[in-house]
Amino acid sequence: MTPLELRHKLGTLAKQHDDELDAVEKELRGKYRLLRRAVVMEAGEEVCVNAELEEVWDEFNPRRSELPPGTPLVEYD
Image (cartoon, rainbow, N blue to C red; front, side, top):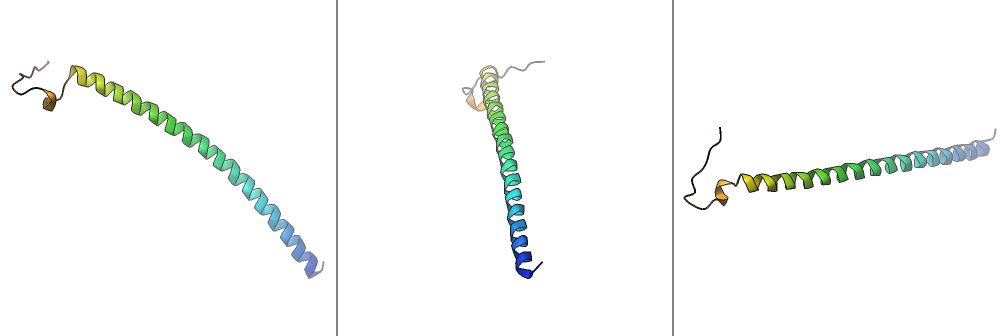
């Protein structure tokens, strides 16, 4: 093989390698985006549930700062 043919073959192999890397990168980015989206959605749902639970808790167990002054505190056993 001549040096020109070797350079051409090297260029062709480099392009194939780059194309394969691009395909793998695209696939991994797609999987990452799907997983990230699922985590964000799950976290959002968890935040909503936690907020609802906190609201219900506050209804039955008001914080001291929310009680009018002089309100007697009731303790449960």
